[in-house]
Structures are given as C-alpha cells and as structure tokens.
Image (tube, rainbow, N blue to C red):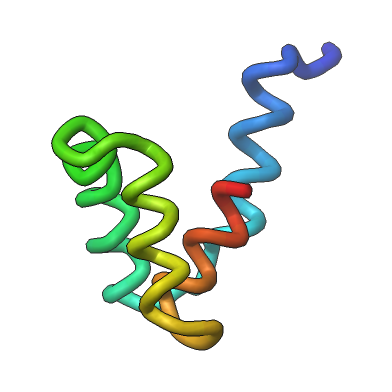
Length: 64
C-alpha cells in the first residue's frame, strides 16, 4: 500500500527531529503560541537572533 502525502510528510518530519534535545522539543511545542502572539516573521526573526547554534537555529532551519 502506498503512503499518502500526509504520511510521507510525517515520516520526514519524524526523521528530522528524532533525537533532538528536550530544549528543542519544548521550543517546538511553544512555537505555535509565539506565532499566534507575535506573527510568523517576528517569531522567525527571534529564532534567528538567538544565534547560529543551538535549538533555536535548528528549529529555524527545520521550519524554513
């Protein structure tokens, strides 16, 4: 049986984030609230302002 597009996306997302730190997981869970409160561009700018290393940079790369 072939996978649907949603299943392929979910499998890719799982592969990308598997093994990430607890800080990354907590930030990913908080990201929707940040977007709703501040907007997408401001949230992405905040992640970028945190530097090129760490869980903020990782999540920024995964979103982009």
